[in-house]
Amino acid sequence: MSFNRNNTIIPLSFIGIMFFAIGFALGINSLLVPVLQGSLEISNAASYLIIAATFIPFLIFGYPAGLTIKAIGYKKTMSLSFFIFAIAFYLFILSANDSSFTLFLLASFVSGAANAYLQASVNPYITILGPLESAAKRISIMGICNKLAWPIPSIFIVWLIGKDVSAIGISDLESPFRIIIFAFIFLGIIALLAPLPEVKAEGEDSSSSETADDSCTSSKSSVFQFPHLLLGCVALFLYVGVETVSLGTLVDYANSIGLSGAANYAWIAPIGIVIGYICGIILIPRYINQATALKICSIIAIAGSLLVVMTPSHISIYFVSLMALGCSLMWPALWPLAIADLGPFTKTGSSLLIMAMFGGAVIPTVYGWLKDSYGPQQAYWLCLPCFLFILYYAMYGCKIRTK
Image (tube, rainbow, N blue to C red; front, side, top):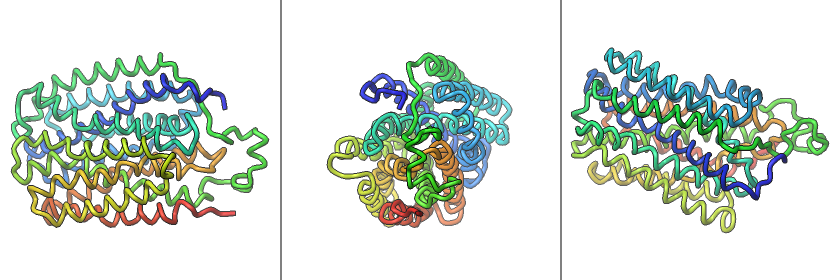
């Protein structure tokens, strides 16, 4: 290991800023969906293509991002991603000026590409920055930075423009987006100058004699020979999709059922997730391990999704926070469980997990279609089977190994 893991405070601080930026960039979608519905008069399913366009790049750029990290390292890849974000928000301005839904989709796609590169670098970095058994604790700390950022774009833009969500048009977005562009350029420079040493997972150096003797990896010739990783990719696909639904639909849901101050409801899901992250920081690994945390969270999420669809709509929106609470430790637990024992396949396995984040494109789009067909509340039924599979992975899937 090329890095002294006892000295992690400064790297954690800088990575926390980057996780905040990830949440901020994804949180823009919470506002764009209802704004585009009102300004361009498009359907729910069409408007949720904005979220799909943000997550499709994870499938396309997940593997190239891994190659980029191998070529230039984690830190430069992080810096590159912020400059791509700046380009994306400039395209958002052009989209607003031309009132072009196609350009909005392109801007979201570029933003998603930036996010793919940033996620591909920060997630394995924070996982291998310390002992694997406490990775969920570190990711939980980063998750607080990430999820608290989700509602900020909606609240910031509503405050800056001085209009409620239902009154905002796409022509109002230019000024806030220019501020965001400068912020991302600044973050790109900060990332480039940040004191972030390069790290490696145990056994990642294929020339290591320990790797040659490792019975878990010595007989493997492909990353696809690790069932726990492949099932983890499916679980992560579903998890990212349902968490994006819980975080990205609240403003639209509140607006759809006629609640005033719809932007304020964006806080409901992040609060639930942050509570879960705090529990993860306290409990993992001292009191519970990562697999147990995943089981508990899956059960909570299943209960939350049932309450969302079975209670009166003006009450059900608050149960999204329970669904989000269940989502909270899924990412911190899924990631280290899925890349455990990969050795020299760690970077490739991480790339597959980044590609699995494509679920954030598929699940919310299906939600939008279900909303058009059955209404906003009944569309949340979609989350139940996703959480059931994640529970299966926590109980059995993460333990499957091949000899």
